[in-house]
Length: 119
Image (cartoon, rainbow, N blue to C red; front, top):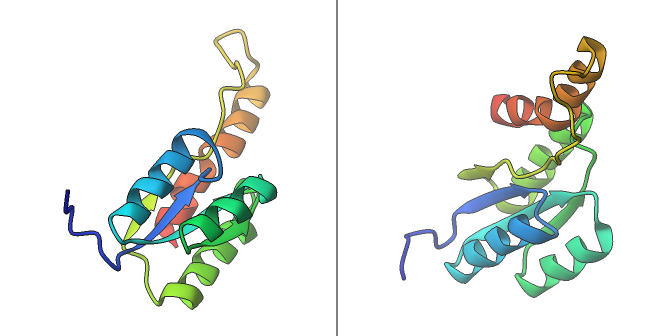
């Protein structure tokens, strides 16, 4: 199938394993240039070699890491066309969670979504 993704520059956060890795492989199969960001260097490096992409190890809850992902992608591909915000995990926070714990969960699982889109 031709989704007109050839040579598009894509960032996939949480792209080293699971759903993210499947997205990376799908984009690469369509000819996109893929930057994989995440916290799993062994899997990320292996996948990046498989798809001729790049892997950027990053803890995305840190703004500086988000900036590095954007900068390294721009350095490698010259542009960013698509951003897939897949990073995060279910930390079990519910309505019994204190406001402080909830905000820590937001920082860990959601702040990078805004930061990467903003950048």
